[in-house]
Length: 257
Image 1: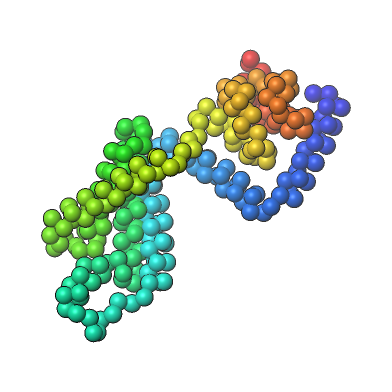
Image 2: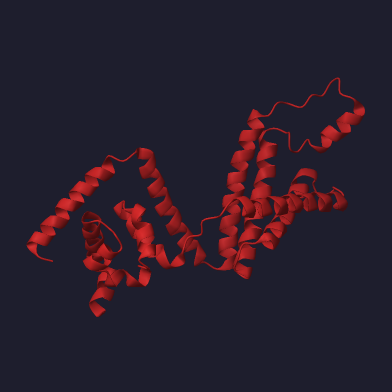
């Protein structure tokens, strides 16, 4: 790249950097969080199944404990006096859900942690997320909830009934979600390109990459004309090409090509 070309790149980078600094702080945080999340998911997917399952279970448990603790803080205390004895028997059955912050944190940690762990294992083994995996994960979380709320002295039939109820509700919600929403699935062929665009603050051009079929294997081969054909403006094109030129791995592949 000549001196004039280098000057243009520096000038464009300065302008884009200024524009990025003027972005909404919330948007900047979302971009950074998405970049970290993508990198973490990429790392986690390369680990062995026990490691991935343990990490996912722990993360799910922490999230559940936080939500449960918050709900327990906001929940009113159960009435103890002036309650009909028959009604009290029913209330005691729901004591685990309407208890204090520690009780709810424990219960939700068990539910979300076990659910996330089983779902992770099912996805790794079966290679997909479907109704069967969701139902099995919900059944397991129902058993876990019964164990932590009633203890080992609880009746096995109650645990099975609770787990079946969890599985039924999860199955219904899964089918409703499939009907009314279309989940966004990240295309693995554009992971490297997506990360690059996020770093440059050009994530809005990801759709251009997909429309032009500029998948990760094509990154070392990118030229100004190829990016132009994908309807990417001159400024972003210069930044992308400069990034590829500075990336040791992509530059090495470009040189060998």
